[in-house]
Length: 271
Image 1 (cartoon, rainbow, N blue to C red):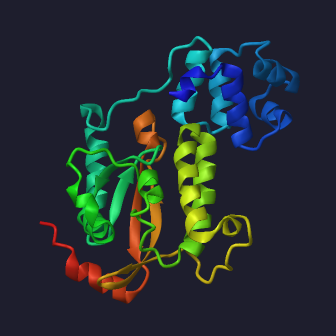
Image 2: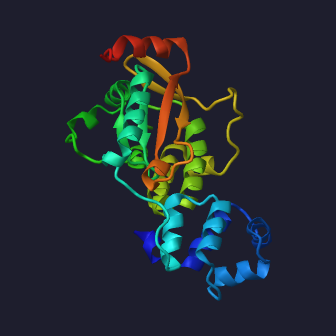
């Protein structure tokens, strides 16, 4: 709800700073003077609808931020925001489910911009039950936020054997996300506090371990032996709906043959 209290000048300032652009750079991109950019960002001038759309496009602002800015300027929203279960998004939702099924037995999940878990495949359910058996006791309709799971003392990091490698790198990524989505900040800092308690405060500010692989790999100690995964993310190309623009599919891949063998043996076949 924090976004609703922002003014247009503050929204535009935050969006520009998130892109690390100066007022001069932005002015050259949108074809207006730096003075006009300054006047709009200080509230001394209001951009036309066309200029504001071009302005937000050059900043690559999230669609939700673009709609908020349009409302703050007194214009109608530019983008729809249907729920994922809405008939208008039926094809998109089916495409997401197809991606998840195709990735089994390796884990895959769908999350939104606030890291709420929306869908999980068979491999994802098996890995969740393996790393967090207590989650099986949660009611089926319980909303799950992955940032809460990361910060939970018995969550995803509980059995991570290389937290010293993965934790600080993930925290940096999450803090970058929180720049565009300030509502994430409290959850991200809760994760940071867990890392401080597990690794010590100095570990979050010192030099990170030199990477030994081209991708960051998470390793977990389990009853089936050590499991290792790296991830890739899929998003919709050129989405024109806020909900679709916020969605990401995380595909987890086995980082070694032993992990692949365990998943193939343990995850039920999808029919």
